Amino acid sequence: MSKIPFFTKQITSPFTIPSGIVTTATTIIQRIFDTMPEVGVMTTKSVGLAPRAGYREPVISQYAPGCFVNAVGLTNPGAEQLAAQLATLRVPEDRFLLTSIFGGSVEEFVEVAKIMAPVSDGLELNLSCPHAKGYGMAMGQDPELVREITAAVKAAVNIPVIPKLTPNTPNIAEIARAAVAGGADGLCAINTVGPGYTSAHGHPVLSNGVGGMSGKGVLPIGLKCVREVAEAVDCPIIGCGGVSSADDVRAYQDAGASVVGIGSSLVGLTTEEMGQYFKTLEADLAHGSNNAESQIRYDVDMQFRPVTLVSNERVCDDICILTFDRKINLKAGEFVFLWIPGLGEKPFSALTDDPFSLAVIDVGVFTHDLMSLQPGTEAYVRGPHGIAVDPPEGAKIITVSGGTGLAAVYQVARDFPNTEIFTGARTAERLYFIEECKKIAPVHIATDDGSEGHHGFVTELLRDYLQGLGEEERSKLMFYNCGPAPMVHAAIAVEREFCGDARIHSAIDYLTKCGVGLCGACAAPDGRRLCVDGPFMDASATTKCV
Ligand SMILES: Cc1cc2nc3c(=O)[nH]c(=O)nc-3n(C[C@H](O)[C@H](O)[C@H](O)COP(=O)(O)OP(=O)(O)OC[C@H]3O[C@@H](n4cnc5c(N)ncnc54)[C@H](O)[C@@H]3O)c2cc1C
Ligand SMILES: Cc1cc2nc3c(=O)[nH]c(=O)nc-3n(C[C@H](O)[C@H](O)[C@H](O)COP(=O)(O)O)c2cc1C
Image (cartoon, rainbow, N blue to C red; front, side):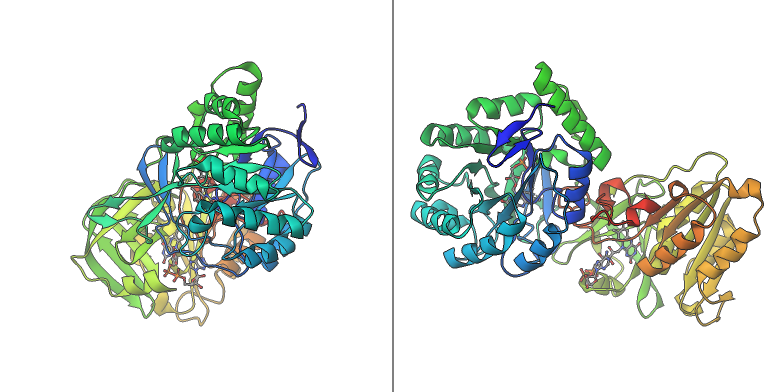
């Protein structure tokens, strides 16, 4: 791999993943540093001075294959916290860590820049985010403000500063010249286009109503902008917007980009597939071929299908079972999103697929409203998402669940022979669906207060059972754990006494937002993403990589 000069470093490749896509968590960044040398520039999610939760889901909507609008709302942990996280990264010598920053004023940009500079190789200035109210748009469209922000940040730090330009301006060349007049070392173009609006079944999809457009449809706009910028100024340009193939990369290079970002096209790719995609892209550039695009997941489907609630049975104060009027197509291990317009969308395992039913525990805004959802309510489902479980033939399958985790494993027990169900609850009144489980597999119950089954933790019951197994059965063990994180960790500890990590699969419900791998919210401690690499991931996923 020959090295390419990029400001202060010699980098491995001319590719980056643009800000806010996939590489939004430190663990994901470290995994890509460690396993994907083809990504030469690592761009972080834009960070501001104060933490921001961002908008509630839906935050990403698909309007055609490979085409998206998003309104994430600049979710970020705040500069101080992100700086502490980035400080723990092992950044390879031949990779460039580009931290994207934003601010509500010139002073705020400078303050964030000063905090982030010591842990970054360069700063990208997000002047152009079209949807976060009060930020971005107005700044990126005003040449004098762009010059002022760039000059102020340049005066405050001594690393390269790369303003990122919005395409939503009649004269991007003028903005580029202003940024360079302010001292910009390089430029990035483009941020998202629009905003645009999507609706489904008569309702706006994004909780923010409108969002920035990205993906295949914005390619011609990105190319036009980069060409105009390259004609106006003489500095390195990071080009992005709609890139999916090596031909697109070459088109950006012809337009004047030296580094090219591939963002929305990574939709649906597992971490392993993403590594393979970048390898192919690099080989395409080396050999003049155009093979990488065949790996893009144009089949990812985020469309919503209607379902009507038939019954809402309360199990206890904070758990209910919702049964809908139809079957959904979903294999054991996969998950869906339930969308209620006006309320939002959240991911769930289907307790059963036919009819579609959910076991829900009340933990927040959405799930609280589900507790009293009235029969007859029309809701919408997208998916299935995630990877179905695939135990080897002849496996001795053990499912371990707590809370609503039973929903994720019931279909495993139903669809694969030779399964034992272990389930735990605080009290007997919190148990549900037990009779149905008994019809398909032996059921082992534990309650903390002893009101049903074993008095104590389900993991104690599990250890006793496993100790009673012969060598032959132990060699075929395959575990599927789902429930509260402490229960899953305790189960993994017991299971590791009997087999290796490759036979232990756990679904811990890390906060999952887009479900298609783009937003990176569901990062596991090892840098994989639950929504595309899971939800069931082998036990090494729980081991921190930074
Ligand atoms: C693949 C998958 C399958 C799931 N299956 C089920 C299921 O079958 N039944 C079920 O009841 N739930 C399930 N969940 C969890 C469910 O999606 C969350 O409980 C739900 O998103 C919470 O939304 P809310 O609006 O009620 O909470 P919010 O108002 O968004 O949040 C309330 C509080 O809970 C925290 N929180 C929110 N989501 C999570 C999370 N995922 N993990 C930890 N803390 C969180 C927030 O930080 C906040 O403090 C699943 C999650 C995933 C990823
Ligand atoms: C989910 C999502 C989040 C994004 N977040 C940011 C962000 O925080 N800062 C930023 O400058 N651009 C952000 N962008 C814009 C991208 O960095 C990129 O400029 C744009 O998506 C065009 O590239 P693409 O078509 O390859 O996705 C985001 C885009 C998406 C899809």
